[in-house]
Image 1 (tube, rainbow, N blue to C red):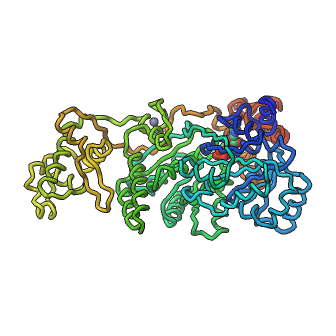
Image 2: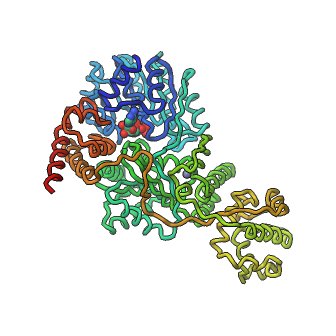
Image 3: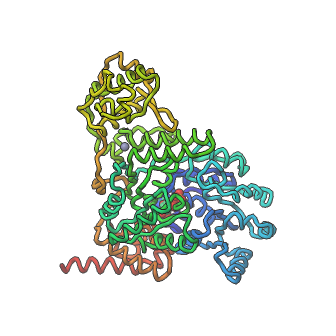
Length: 607
Ligand code: ADP
Ligand code: ZN
């Protein structure tokens, strides 16, 4: 099929005018019968890469998906667009399953969603050749790798499909970008000379922000309050914290729920569902939450605790703004959290595991403390160059931190490390150095005679917090290094020694501010519209969604509502031009929305 043909289907079935980056290439290769491996960030539009080709095929496309609880929503979304899709899983009763099997044998469906353990059942495999399968799409394909964050042993068996269905092309999709996981995928799935596509991992509509954590519970309440009517996820490290925080938010009059792997399955699913259906606005969750959740209007993701590594942080923040509208990622950070994380790592039994975990944590701390562009740092982790600085979407670019001449401070700090080392033949940690600099009178200082050092009390012009930030910046600059052991100590590096001798001036940055208010500026992806009309259309959408018993975003994503509220179409043909309105949705939903818009306009005229 040529490009125009694909574009026609894109508009007719999905209501979109153009492809997102790489979608077209992936679709064309896949239709040419090639194995394809597609690495697109969350919100990159992976689903379309297998849904659209499925519509042009005569036979069936099987979609392997890890999460049973979320299949129904995905299929409901397709059905709402008039696409013949179904799923098979343990939530269906025997009659319903039988009916669906019959439909499959009769070729009534274009897409079948199924979990790997069910697909690979010998009884299912046996009859697979009768289903006229033309393509296999494997979603969340990183689940195949132990190095990913969601390992599912069942995914390993999928390679057997190569013999069960010879010649049927695979389309493997994930948002997980680490090299190790990529290699595992190609090898374990036995992909044949796959075409690899990697989109940029930059998410231009996301704003990244670090907020110093002091009273985290209250800070979260404030963040949620100041984003009234918006939906968000708050990630916490512990199960208990998710529940406590949800209660705290509820006490503040905010509809919030908790989600973690320790809840009873029914409870967990209920809480997830209430979030997907906008019955609760905020979900306080552990990292068990999020994979496969296609809710597109998550406007903010807050990290209540310091994530263990950048990869996880990137994936979790990525759940904001799938629809491309401006969304925020806020990390509450304190150095006490960093210390707490180090202690967890110390408890790991395996030294190699400890080493990797420390390294990853160090990168995360660097991200949180650095005054460089957050986007550049994140993308750098995935080896993706990013130079358009200021990026316009991170705290460090939006409100560059004040810089000051730190030459003297750095001289004092580094020579203090040097003197301490000289005097005691052992190294000490950051806190001890600061105590010496600020002339603290502690038992340790007296016992070790550190009050006799020439650097004792020479740094009283800065507070302890200021020294901490200075110290950490010097570590980042490579003038001193922090050991990775339990009681981490500081050492002067060669670079540090060279700099001290050179007497060059050095500029340092002031610590971060504590703003938690939403960023009010024109953001990437913003669709300016009448906000009140948008809110009204949301209630209209909600009524339709409730009557069909599906989440709102299945009717229309927020983007479509914003376009509607901006352009205010007056008839069906104008309505059909709106992004996200395909043929089926035009037929089913234009009337209630057109009515709502014309009523709105009429009432505006009257007032
Ligand atoms: P992913 O699985 O990669 O995270 P999704 O498939 O959930 O992304 O798509 C994210 C959002 O983008 C969905 O709301 C989807 O409808 C929308 N989308 C996908 N492709 C396009 C496109 N070509 N134009 C506009 N919106 C798109
Ligand atoms: Zn930036």
